[in-house]
Length: 221
Length: 243
Image (cartoon, rainbow over all chains, first blue to last red; front, side):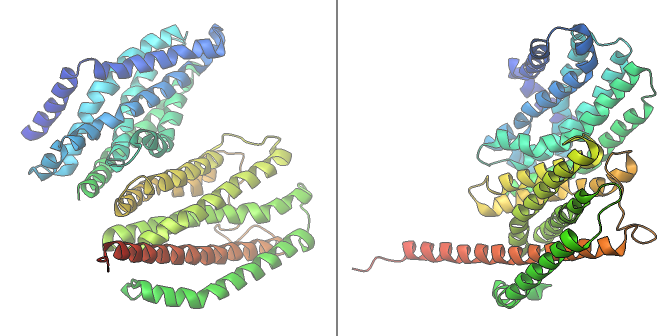
């Protein structure tokens, strides 16, 4: 457990020393969302209608863009190999890295999301649910993304490939994330969607570290 | 199963089976198409366009069958390091992609007259589209490494991760209220479809399956022979120059 916390701390320190790098994800998120009013026009009603979808899609893309950093840097400088050799189970190491990744990318997105929702004129009933759904959804994205990040280690053109592998698997999170917010805005019950998001999170929490560890092992063999 | 691990034995067996699978698939698909297009009755609601079913439904079945086949092959390859299983999964991928594409296109053509739209975003259609992307991702990943065995292993893990989509596709029409109709052939209490329509449908399905086996064996044989050629070339390069 102590090693686990130290591992999370190490990744957080690395992210902090890289400074602006982890902020870039949030900047991308904001810019991607801000593009939409230019694309579909500044009509408040239209923007309010599609706000949840825009924010979720942008969060999805932002989370995906940061995945390459999750394992690639450690793979390149060889520290991943040392981590695999360490006495801690590889699945636990993966979990620690995913938590650090979520703290540096997922959490800032959640903080920025309500602000963007205001910019997009989203109905106030949706705010709380949006944050709640993002809280359940973004760790799921990091977990699924870790599998993709593990699979592309050492491949050619990793980044583009990663999007092809990961985005199809992101779709369920997107569907239920947007569904929950839309239901809340429409005044319907949103408990079911939130519970499915929670189920997706727990399911990926159980399975993805395992698949990622398998991917890392075959990459280092 | 290890009896078939030997590529030599596979080459012998597949050479013997090739003409049979080719012949059976051609005969079955021809018979199925004849029954489907000329003999089977028109639907009292859908008219002639019901005949689209005989192409659409078997290819949708095959899209799931191919992926399941790939997942089993990938699991065998990961667990027992079976070289033929890797080749089988790799060779099945383009065939499955084609069947999925066929199912999407014929479904779209069928949907326009029936539903009034080329495409609707309901659970069945969306999950099949995801399956199509999973196939593309698999093929991209397997070719993304300089070392082919790494590509095989990474892609095998991807197939197993993506397998979660297969039961979702199968049951999507029961879990969600969709425009796509629920299963009417494989269900509790027997098929809810008249024998005059069921016969060509099953003929087409079996015909597609033998076609899959036929093309799969051709592709696997090609892969094995390509590997042999590569090995022979390498030997030639490494051989000491006489002179």
